[in-house]
Length: 556
Ligand code: ATP
Ligand code: MG
Image (cartoon, rainbow, N blue to C red):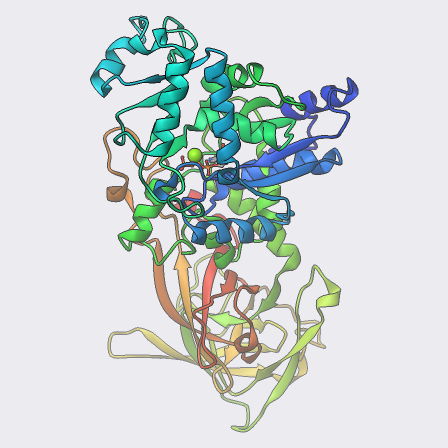
């Protein structure tokens, strides 16, 4: 895994194509790419892969990458999605200022369709859906010529104009490209390029009642914008002949070409917008930006950095093989980046009370905490140390097992940034559960070292019970219990992990109560945590971004 990420790779096949085109001066005006999301949902980590490729290739070659809202299908599109897409692209570190809307080209697309009709390359078809299927054939049976094929150009021009004028019912007529009803590629058997749909468009209102189909619209959008290289996922490979057919039969200054690469599939999550929308609408998650969602906004809220996502995308490489990437690969990238950037703090999740018996009640010592050992410029902060402390329950054992170097009766440990303490006595409740430790501290060990050279093996974290604040932590795990939810007959909803979010309370050192939403820190020895936007002045809420180590592998 790490090898795959760390090794510098040779150019991938797409970058090789671009390099070759540049060498041959195929595009003297420069390289233009585009990222064309349909604004019918929030972007997810799969889109991040595409964004890094589209914007990356442009950037590396002094070109431009257009952000294009592919809004030609009015059914589920919305301005809310447009805004989130712009925000996410920007957050990922790319420039969303070359912004285009495919719906702005409706008139130009219409004119292109008219041109095709005039060339005898498109016709209006009035077959019913059943007849349509019958004439088209299937993979075993070639299609046969439709009645519309023999209409005159004048007839087709008239019918298409009347389609636009709203004279016909939804679904009663379509415009088809006149290609080849016997093609082995079903997409070439006179594909539909326009259909009638009386649905308001979120930007065009009711101006149009006919809308272009994806295969016709997309290549035109690329051509109108002077895109040179149009990257998309492998499922569009079989549509490429149609992409080329449309452009070859119309005349453009810059001729774009489509290249396909494998999509990202990530384990233990789903990526289809339909499924993500269902999770949101049916309240399985808090919203699109729920920290468990594979959406870019969800990851941001969880504390994942843009750099971690970019490194992850880079490490994936661009190939033509569809595979499944383990979530652990992503988590590795997140840890690697946060280790460099996140400030360290002390917080206790499962508190056990500690009383220092050889200390005055009003004693307070302010110790220096190193904010980030990986980054000196992050500075230090003061951490109050007092008679009453909390440590993690798991840092004490009545009967320590072999190799356990933390607290136990009669044993001594170092408190991070503070002193050595020694457990003199433990207090249990009526069930025999340990509820308090009575310890002594050695005032000579301030800062963590004993002047007599005495060594302790364990260092544990702690907070002052007198000064700490209470906070909420949301502990996240995989959203689904299986690697590929919804595979085969299974309904993906039945495979949701019931423990994907656990809410608990914890104690944090005072400095942590000042952290602002979206800031990510490390709780020492516990994990990386992002301050959530649900935080209030009284109570901070933290989302666990990742644990410090991969605990999933062990669990399985
Ligand atoms: P859905 O099918 O869930 O609606 P989509 O693929 O249709 O998603 P678009 O908004 O059309 O979503 O995608 C925009 C761009 O992002 C396309 O070029 C698409 O190929 C790419 N993309 C989408 N999902 C992935 C993925 N999982 N991996 C890589 N690229 C992706
Ligand atoms: Mg799509």
